[in-house]
Length: 334
Image 1 (spheres, rainbow, N blue to C red):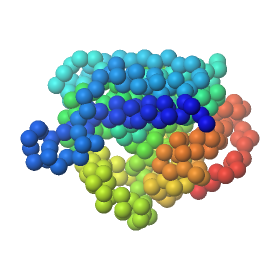
Image 2: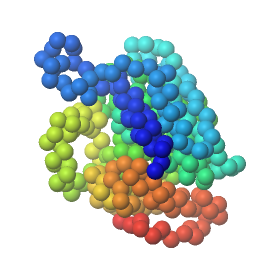
Image 3: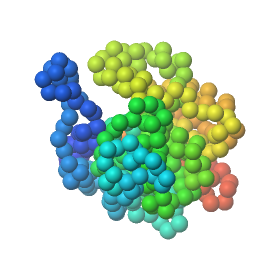
Image 4: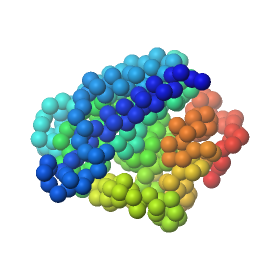
């Protein structure tokens, strides 16, 4: 029995709480909504120090060495007429970043987590991926150990700018280019939108169970219908239909980055949405389904997930431009 497992689970749970703390607004004290608002969604006092400490405990199970840093992305985008991300404050913002030791000249893989999560959710993947890539994982602005400016966005466009512009300022601060960009769920939506706006920096795009690629089958999913009937599902559905409405992302004349979609075979984000999107793409596009995995396939089946990543990046990893690899056993090409 792995004695570290209970500690890992405790650290992961603390990381989840820390990642989501202060990101979900609570109703005013004494209001009718305060009496019925689920405790799990109420504001949880926390601090960056506590979050970083939880992150370090979680990453203690990772064998690969790493450097954690708070990357300063400034107080406002160049030429902006408003303060950074429409915040009332002009103080500098920081993106919590973890960079893992890698072999010299290894390709760079940037990993972006999903909604109300953090980079620590990839803790089961860092060792395997760092063996082939220079892995850099971030906490998106407003989550995890990153800065949490006032969120005053009132439209999908403003919300997109919040995440995409902060990612671009982070890229500039890190002086990165020609990297592989991986995003999970809502992070996949952000990664896809970023690649549309800044394709010159993205070598390959990997979207893991991404939001924003809907299909009719997805909306008819029995599991999703049942989930939406719960209080958690109703709240997530409300968020998705207000500030975070992805809808369809792809426009054939705009998509210029080679793309791989990865789904767990039991993922509630239906892969058929990606199949529809692929029909409109004029660049290489693959869809890989990983068995024994759901929406968090990188936790459910890490070895299958790693095989899918290596296969998706086979041309980059081979260095000679030849494919050289067949789809690993167990993975499904959709």
